[in-house]
Image (cartoon, rainbow, N blue to C red; front, side, top):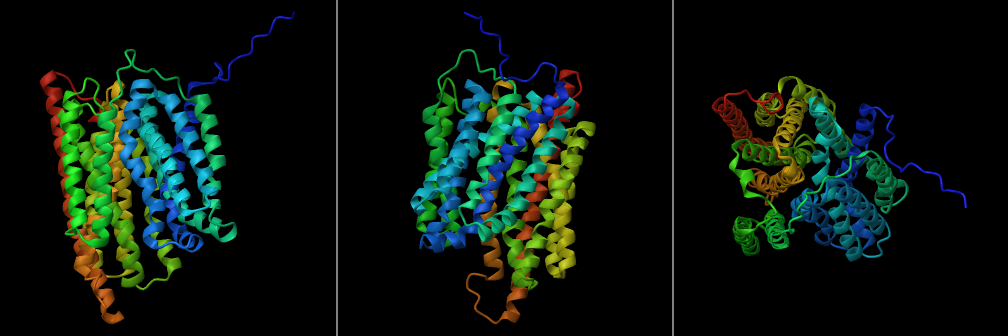
Amino acid sequence: MKARSAVPPPAVPRAMPVASRARWALAGLSLAILLAQFGATVVNVGLPMLMQVFNASFAAAQWVVLAYLLVITALIVSVGRLADLWGKRPLFLAGIVVFTLGSTACAAAQGLSWLIAARGVQGLGAAIALSLTMAFVADVVPKSHTGQAMGWLSTVQSIATTLAPTVGGLAIAYVGWRAIFWINIPVGIAAYVLAARYLPASTPQATKPRFDWAGTVVLAAALSAYCLAMTTGQRDGFDDTRTLGLLGGAALALLGFVALQGRSASPLVPLELFRSLPFNASMGINLLVATVMMSTLTLGPFYLSQGLHLSPQRVGGVMSIGPLIAAVIAIPSGRAVDRFGARRTLVAGLGLFTVGVVSMAIAARIDNLASYVVAISVISAGYAFVQTPNNSATMDEAAGGHRATVSSLLNLSRNLGLVSGAALIGAVFAAASDFSSRATATMHAAPAVAHGLEVSFVVDSGLSVASLLLAVLAVRSRAGAAADAGGTPARAGH
């Protein structure tokens, strides 16, 4: 019997240069984050058709969006911790498979309940992808280039946000609503092939401590209750009994979660992470900046259409300016991180971001398109110089055994900021413009909407200044710690 010839495994060829392997690995990570971000935004454009197809109310159809976001928010920390314990690579590959299967189930849905459940499956896959992409960066690129890699991932995220409405609209118009889910399948397959071939093998913890299932359930309950409270509060008011009950339940569940983590031998979220001022500052900055950015996404269309009376086509064009600028600026911001350090770049970026937010409040008073475009351009450029260095600094300082958990917490703080921004700043806008009860003539609507935008961005200006102060405190804290240790802070984190 002829001896079987040795067949090399389908791993990365040894002759392939490290830089080439890193590029292909980064391509796989980019496709995964593209899928997750695309899935979060593309469905919005299809809601009117889904209401018609399934003969559903807007409140019922909205669960197609909410199911996805709720699962991500509730489980993203848990899957990050699971990856730290058992290894990132197998869980990441499983996440791509789950997302792709969820997309297939969405495309094949025969009823609204089926579609909502399938969107929850998609959300689980997206939670895994989002929690692990940043955690992999340190494993696939040299430390001197982590800023550029983070900048590229931010660029992909912005591109997905920009393209989703356009691609989704074209797919629905020419193929049908199922096409917005079918298009995920080839991208998912490509992401899996690249990740399986080029991502480095995982190194799970040797002791494999027990996973904190109790903490997972309690944290998921707290986060779900908070997100639902923001949803009902936006619709029914924050003095509504159901909203207050959900907020109270979220607070109690969060207190219970902290108590559980303090007693757990292998906590879901190690509480020692929050003893670091720079870490807490990074999470706070992520939440505050995301809150402000959600204001631009939710209030911008109202102001442009009802304040400046632009057509839907022009509104779409103006709304694409911000994501495009953020996409273009993200890579240079990564290079600035590698050259000047993450913390210094972050402070500069937050300064620019704050100028843009204040400019938006002024633009609402000036009340013309040119001032709005200038303000949103400065905000978007500043955001690119905030997101990349904040992610880079936090991940650079994360201990190897907690990298996936920290990545998950970064994404969680961003998601909570987006949810809070839509609900809380939306409520400020509605109150300031009297939008919910206004039934006056059209001539009075435009000044009211402009006033609502101005008041909303005055509030956002306070949030931006607070985020800038957090960044300054983090820099001083880190410099003081380095001085006490008799050394100098690393460039990436300074």
